[in-house]
Length: 206
Image (tube, rainbow, N blue to C red; front, side, top):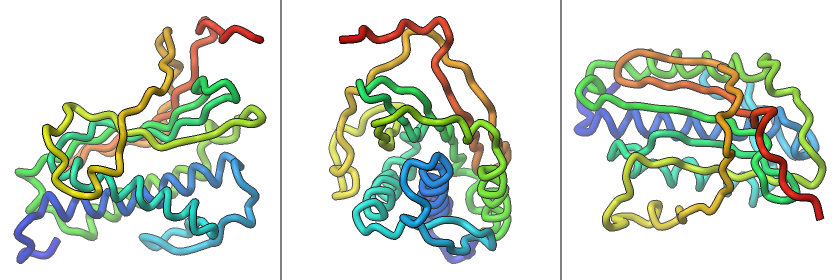
């Protein structure tokens, strides 16, 4: 971390949203939602990752991640989810990033230390067995953020990009599969996958 930075927690937040952009892209790639030709290999944090070739897909992921920056800087973001839906818009799988930033410790962390910790998530993702479960046909996906509280007034264009969601929720507690966790200062981050319980009520068929 640059000691001259006047907002060390903001620097941590910027590093985190850059990481989220890459991680979200990797999840979508690994799930096989699009043909592999829709992505290209890149290096990020000295790890081989994937980058979307299609401008609209790349822009959606980038806007979703960086649109969270002002919310993360204010400590409002509790979870960021990549949600895959069935054809009838019921969630079938959720990749959850649960995060907490401690602003009082942000100034003491070196940027290289934070990147080293986040790199372990990018290494873990491709070898996680939970990623290989097939998705249903005609499914869709989206990025959803869960906030601890809603800001009273949107103070930036990035905040205005996010809209309230009407995503359906499961009625039963989900089955949780841990993928990777980081518990240190200033960032605590958990990545886990949620699937509906076997006892979850099934949607009515037409």
